[in-house]
Amino acid sequence: MTDVGNRRRPGGRSARVRRDVLDATLELFHAVGMDGLVIADISARAGVHETTIYRRWGTRENLLIEALLDEAEELLPVPDTGSLREDLVAYLTSLAAYLSTPRGIDFDRALAAAGDDPDTRQARDQYWNTRYGRSSQIITRAIDRGELPDATSPRETIDMLVAPLHFRVILTREPLDPGLPERLVDTLLHGLIVP
Image (cartoon, rainbow, N blue to C red; front, side, top):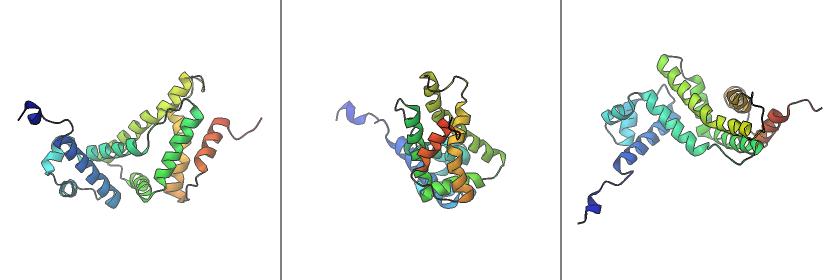
């Protein structure tokens, strides 16, 4: 047997354990919400010891945030088409598609209903700050290209864009029709008053 056969493969067991734990976390989170999420249940579903989870993530909240961010990276990529409007439409369309699924609806409502204890608040803030940091790249690139004024606030712009979707999912429970993302982007970029 050669030395090659004995070498550790990148992404071997450690990557599989990570994936199994993150998948189990997401499945349980979407099934029982944040309040019902228990490390022992995640451990059983993933087929790993609880100590493995605590050693790698420390807390349930840290684990949940990594799982949610991992899911968001896959389902909600930040586009870079070279055009502000096209980036915003693509981003909002993918968000609307996700929030129109049972999983997306459960996610939004679970985060909205999560308590305000320090661990939960910290986890929620970490999730949203990371997502804002990534999605704000759309606005920062547009400023750099001269499509938006230098004084544009990336976070406020993203807030104005995504808030109507979350409002409908969480509060009014209206469906997100396919044309909504484009209408919201055009309203944001051009305003309501026509000169």
